[in-house]
Image 1 (spheres, rainbow, N blue to C red):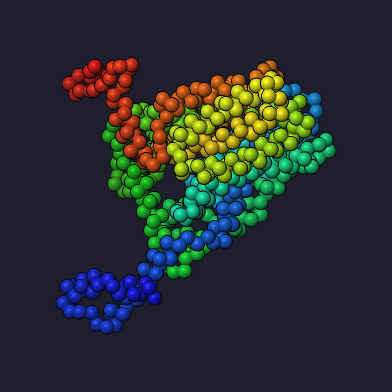
Image 2: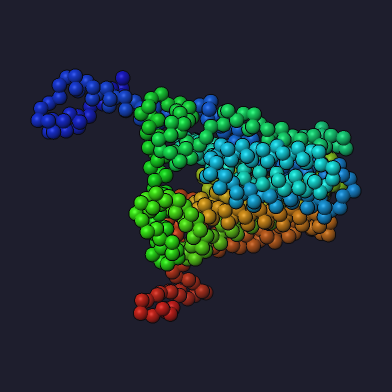
Length: 553
């Protein structure tokens, strides 16, 4: 009723009709116009109300199972270590644990191609098969070498998960719920870590440890069994075919739309966004050709029209990496994103969840209890991080996170040395985990999307992800030796990494909250135009007549 009333207040169409046809509208013509306007306005009102539908919840839940499985595989080797082929060497076990990080970069690189070529849905199903088969091989493994091979395969699935699940959830969620649904990836991940610790109580023993590995396959089989409920991303379907009926059917189910007009409005949003992205990619390709970076120029206009999208994707992907490192306007942003990824891992967080059993051995009576407490703190801290993320700046959270972790490391060492008692180290490890989750945990991934525009964001995400996996591998392979050789001082290397992180953040890390990538780059160019050394301001200028740098003091 209100939409019909509001539509009757707008006489613009009637005035346009009168000026065009030279007569006023007939009553039946006006009634038809008002009916159309009222229906359209009603659709706009309904679009403002976000409907959480069962198909949306089902798709999000199924995708979350992969993130859960990733987290579970982080912690599953921790409680089972004393019982899996007893007598293994430290080096062999550290290889078995860190082999997950060998497959991770491979999966992260391949997942993008899977998602683009096969679709998001089939890519998620493929990753689920890798979890399922890898879990079965690990369950039936006759020796530790087979476990290494199985965890490498599972690592490919984990790497693919880090790429596929955020993409899928972002494309399936309506804009008002995109942030909330996006955080479910992190919650599923930390919950998987926690469940891996909990299952250690009944299953981490000489006779049942294989069932902990079997659970990997059970969770991996979930998306396979629920495949009919896993809808394809409408964005991917419309990129392949703007007239796709499947895309329209999926949008209608996901959003709970009741009219064709609502569906077509959503389709138009997707198509326009994809068209803008292709135009940006094509501009980059054209610019590269003009600058001589590429020599393959189609000779026929028809070829350009038919293959423009493919050329833009191929050549844009090929040159994006080189341009990312050559572009001075984003150089500090690239270095900052890499430093944060390295800091996130070398601060030692994953050492707690890989090897907390070794660390707490001799500190408390039941090391598994300490490990489980850390898992619970990890889940709770993730919720705290969600509350803080939109209230505090990224740089501020990184500083507080790093400083808190640094002091936690200091008190962990002092506790292990007997100054506060060994039980106090449990509290400080919990504080260490909590401070990680409010800053160095989520922000290094989040900040990449805030630092780079569409031209560079995918490439930057790929590069920083590889650095993350490499550093993750380094921590996984070296911590047993660090713990054995340094004993109570085993957290000192992590403290050193945190000191360097604080130093870099204080001096160079830019704030990204509330800015666009373009604004951030412009601000950095302006800021770095004047470089201060002690009491001197040195202004760097370039002239067209002289390519040498002229410094004005």
